[in-house]
Length: 477
Image (cartoon, rainbow, N blue to C red; front, side):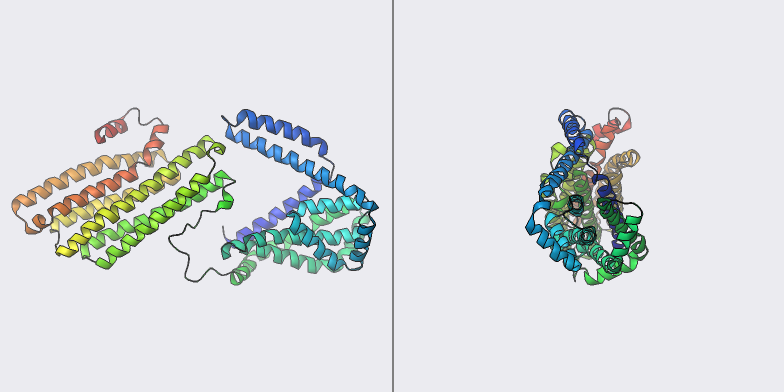
């Protein structure tokens, strides 16, 4: 998601929070026991067989607990109208509304919830503890404090993570500065419209967020450019051996965590594919520097795969529905095969490339052409495997499995041609005989690693129980 799009989303989220304050400003505590009871029943009865329904149960339990918490906030705030200390504090804040905004922002940051702060202010107004005008000023502070919470939380992350929260703080602060002189007029207008004192606060909260969204929605691009300048990406780029998409904060949402793991797996696939692309050049040019470069890339693959495994181990399998469970296994399987491909290139193909450089040998013209052809075939298989991994498409999976039989025939024909050249006494063929056959063997092994992603998809579709795919699998075994 681009920064501009993220800013637009956060504007919508703030309006939605203000709408929720409108609903929760009514006393819905009677609904809390019912939500918790129904939620617990759904979770207890469905967590084994219907995980998605169990998740709905968890949501209902959370909503019930939230309503209880809001009820307890109101109950705890009721005796405040008898507090002489609070009366003195509020009197000092009334004489300095700007200080009231700052105090409200600080309390909201401590509470980590602008919604809870606004509802607390509503309760204080209902009990005649808080004047309406000061309550409106503190609502502005609650909006600012709610925006500060994610900014502080992301300051230790990458610069990219803090851009949207910073934009949100800037929009809230700009809105407060512009609206501040008009708060008395807004209060008078809402009174004339017949709003009660407590309703004035939630209506003002909603109006503030709607105005902010309506105005800044047209300036998301300039604002995005500004926050990118304030938080530029780190110079020199990130470490290629460090995971880019794995974020422990997403582990509480397994579906999101699996999406991040899939993106990281595709990143591993990109590195592995570049290794395979460079392999052909290394074999052709006898370039020791390129061989060393390819081997360093395998270290990157190993590091990323290790981080991915650790991340996947943190995902709670019990909270996954059947589709997510299949994706979990698929990610582990495909990433493991990619790591095996990297090891094959590093420990086998690059070993042979080094031997070829040392011996200063060259392939025959026909032999090199055969290696090029099988290299192109395996490269195409690797690209197809990535498409199958992302889409789970049965047609592509079938094509992938069929490639295994094609490369088997291609390997057989290559060996026959190679032996025929040996009989003819071609010097280059004789000098590179073992290298040639071992390279073809490794390419076929890499192809098999890539094809394996297709079997679970076809098995789930019932395509491995009958038909040509089954016979192919038997031949390969």
